[in-house]
Image 1 (tube, rainbow, N blue to C red):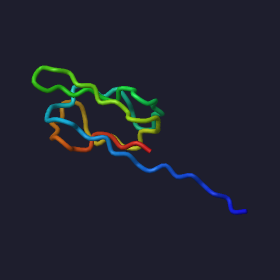
Image 2 (image 1 turned 60 degrees about the horizontal axis):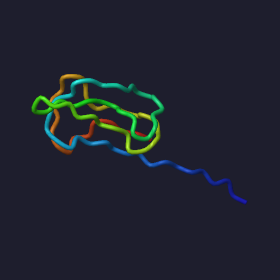
Image 3 (image 1 turned 30 degrees about the vertical axis):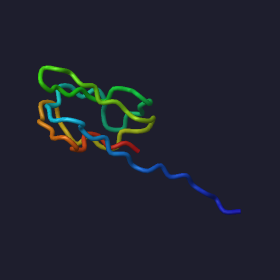
Image 4 (image 1 turned 30 degrees about the horizontal axis):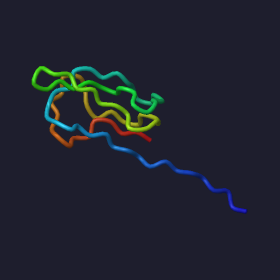
Length: 79
């Protein structure tokens, strides 16, 4: 019998709208749960939570607080 390893694919979490990064609530290497808030965007004086679509580990954060982001821009990569 062969030893099979399950590999989890990387997941890019992208901005759904134009705005600025108001607060980052996670850090590199953090183990997060499904629906956990990763960061908060501010757009048109509204705060928009960006949440993890599934449980996993944060492998990359591509933005910093106060950065302006475009719709579709990758914010966080999870493994």
